[in-house]
Structure formats: C-alpha cells, structure tokens
Image 1 (cartoon, helix red, strand yellow):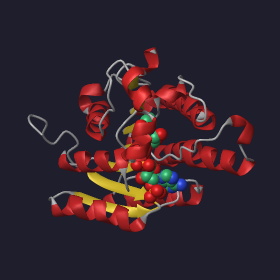
Image 2 (spheres, protein in one colour; image 1 turned 120 degrees about the vertical axis):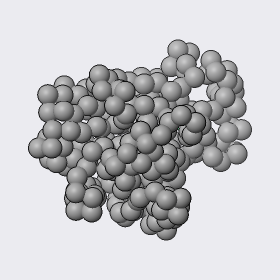
Image 3 (cartoon, helix red, strand yellow; image 1 turned 45 degrees about the vertical axis):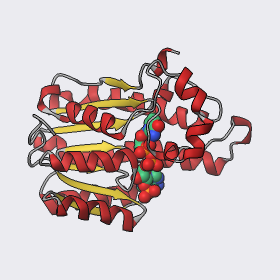
Image 4 (cartoon, helix red, strand yellow; image 1 turned 60 degrees about the vertical axis):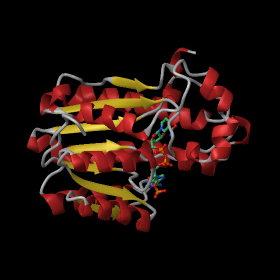
Length: 254
Ligand SMILES: NC(=O)c1ccc[n+]([C@@H]2O[C@H](COP(=O)([O-])OP(=O)(O)OC[C@H]3O[C@@H](n4cnc5c(N)ncnc54)[C@H](OP(=O)(O)O)[C@@H]3O)[C@@H](O)[C@H]2O)c1
C-alpha cells in the first residue's frame, strides 16, 4: 500500500457486483483504505466470502444479495446500506453482463437483460442513492464504463450500446447535482484480467487483439482499475466531475 493510508476513512461505499473481478478488487482496496463496504451481487456465497475476507483483515463490510436488474432489489441494497451504516457516501456502479451476440442474432430477451442489468441498474442505483446524497449534501458516484462505449467491436454491440448510454448518465448526474455536493465520474477500462479474460482460452483467442490492438501490449490488472477508482473517489479529485478516465493502455486510439 505504500503511502496511501485511510483515503476513504469511514466512507460508506456501495458497490454493485463484488462477487468477482474488478468489483471484488475495489471492495478490498476501499476497505483497506478505511471504507465501510456494502457489496452486492447474485452469487451469495462468493459475495459473503469477500465480505468475510475484508472483516478478517480488520475492515468493515457486509454483503447484500442483489439481482441488480430488478429495481426493487437495487432499492433494497441502497436502503440496507443506509440502515446499517447511517448514510451512503459513495456509489460505485460496476455490475455488467457482456454477452457476445451479433446484432442479427439479438433476441428481445437478451436485449432487455443487457439493458436492465447494465444500464437499468446504474440508473436506478443512482436515483435511489441521490435520494440520500442530496439531503446530506455529499456524494460520489463512479460508473465503471468501458472503452467499448466509443470503440465498436463486432459481437458486443448491445453491451456497447448500454455503455454509451452510461456515458450520458454520467454527464447528466454530474451536471444536475454538482451544486448538491455530488460528483459523478466514470472509468473506461480496456481489456482487463477479470471477467471473461480470466479464462485461458479467451486470453488465447484474444492474443492478437491484446498484443497488436493495444499500444501497451498486455491486459490491464484489477488493481490498476481499483487504484484509478480510489483516486476518483478521493478528496484529491473533488474538481473532477464527468471525467472519463480511460485505463486501457491506449486501446481506444487503435
Ligand atoms: N474485464 C474487462 O476486460 C472489462 C473491460 C471493460 C469494462 N469492464 C467492466 O468492468 C465491470 C466489472 O466487470 P469484470 O470484468 O470485473 O467482470 P466479472 O468478474 O464478470 O464481474 C461482473 C460482476 O457483475 C455482477 N453482476 C452481473 N450481473 C448481475 C446482476 N444481474 N445483478 C447483480 N450483479 C450482477 C457479477 O455478480 P453475480 O454474478 O454474483 O451477480 C459480478 O460481481 C463491468 O462493468 C464491465 O463492463 C470490464
């Protein structure tokens, strides 16, 4: 950890999707930095395990089983955070479903699932969090977006469509609530060693894209995203509002 100490001391942080990958990495780093972390996701045993690991390391965390595509469950997540810790300082929208589907094969069901999980959850978690953040005149909202919000890749069109809309959600939130003490920013990861890229066969399949499609020719790490998030949520980033921080090795340039 070096010189970074207690950057999020006593901040109450809600994160969607802490059962694996980037969400899990952020939960652990933020707890190390003094935050009270409210994790969530559908896979309860994995989520409880992450919360338990945080507590075993001396941090504070609970897990709330949540299917984020259901607004009632998202509301329950935000309300539970406030009922448990008295407030919500930070919301990190992170959960996503990334199917590989060419546009011609897209079904209404898959379209709805991507929109509800990726865009609906970010939107409604923001709405419910604002209900608490505006009266307390403080809030930080961070949306985990993707380089695909502007870089189109065949087969991930519907995911990109939701990510492009999240970019506008970030801007709307940043514009409408800055005077209420709220900031909203986004991180746009490139290819990261998380999610699908944890599978060796996917890494092999994407080898050329990783080595020739990214100026920094490797996968990024969960830690590199978590530290970027830590900066945007720290007081050092108080003047950042609607920032899009690309952590992509320059991938969007190719
Ligand atoms: N890995 C990359 O290369 C990459 C690149 C660009 C952007 N990103 C973005 O980074 C974020 C995290 O992805 P990741 O790479 O860490 O993938 P991951 O390991 O698959 O994590 C996805 C998380 O989302 C949660 N989730 C999915 N559907 C959900 C639902 N209906 N309700 C609640 N939680 C749900 C999952 O939890 P449960 O399954 O337990 O519900 C899991 O915790 C996503 O927004 C993704 O778009 C990743």
